[in-house]
Image 1: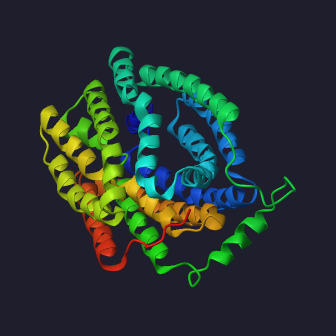
Image 2: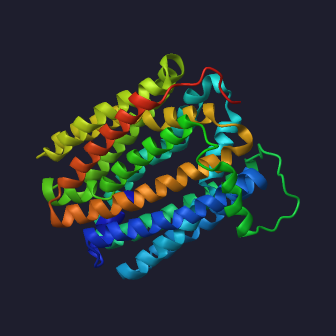
Amino acid sequence: MGIYISLYFVQIGGNPLTLGLLASATALIQLFTFSIGGFLADYYGRRKAIVFAASYAVFFPLLYAVVHDWRVFGALTVLATVESVANPAVHAIVADSIPPENRSMGIASLQVVSSLPSVVSPLIGGWLIENYGLETGFRMACMYAAVFAFISAVQIFVFLKETMKPKAANPGFPVRDALLSFTKLSAHTLPRGIKVLIVSYALVMFANSAVGRYYILFASNVVGLTALEWGFVVSLQLLAASSLKIPGGWLSDRFGKRKVMIFSLLTAAPAITLFTLSQSFVQVVVAALLLVASGIYYAPAYEALQADVTPRPVRGRVTALWDMSNAFAAALGAFVGGFTYQTLGPSVPFYVFAIAELAAALLLIKMVKEPETKED
């Protein structure tokens, strides 16, 4: 469902610029949900936030299926952003549960297993759109997504175990405490390595947000791919990601997370340039797979390296700071992507991506070192 949102949004009356503004609005809201989520993760436990978000997320695919106006669709997308309150808890519970010496590979393995069902979902969505039309096919895909979201929520409620003993006995939640909790993580108390890592990832998030919603528009409107062809491309990407992520995690643990991250950033820039030069289905497939092969290693290595340098008692809030900086960068990137796509040309957001990735690589090369002793 998710990969076709851009096409559907434009179909029901939106345009690339309003799509970017909507993405910016949702990212800005995440600045607040992430701060609350970080507080919840460290003071009330990881599990409660994750169970709430999984239950909350079930309703939105059903609502998307009955919406015919782009303004209402946008409002629902903004409301759905509340589920991101669980992001810090998810990252923290993963970091808590994996031994430091195998953290990259463990995170990569978990991401692969959780993403395997999504390998076929783009093909299913593309087939539905190809056979029933964009609007009807998208709404049918939303109904299927709602069913699987409900199944996922039930599994989380039944099987997920807490990894952090709550610090607060009162189940109530004062927003003031959430905001004040971040004063203990002021700029001068955070190690330099964490600050630079957060900034570098924010650049990566800016880059990806500038292009994320426009891949399908570029492939459809510029190259001329059908929805089913694009679904096939995305399925191949997901399959490649599943195949490469675990070996990449092993390489990160063995040879260094920082080295793998730098390699990923330096190779992603030329790969995105090849995508903008594509003129056929085969060329899009090659460029898309090169993008996966270059970029798939970065996130697991980053998450593991951040966990290595962050003490467990503040991991939820540091993760929330990371998420909040990412949200701000995503808001800016989505606006820049939408503006440049509509006013300067469909290729321009992808060049912005390349520049931001190279800037992030330079930061890692100049200012980041791996710790000799890893946090548990």
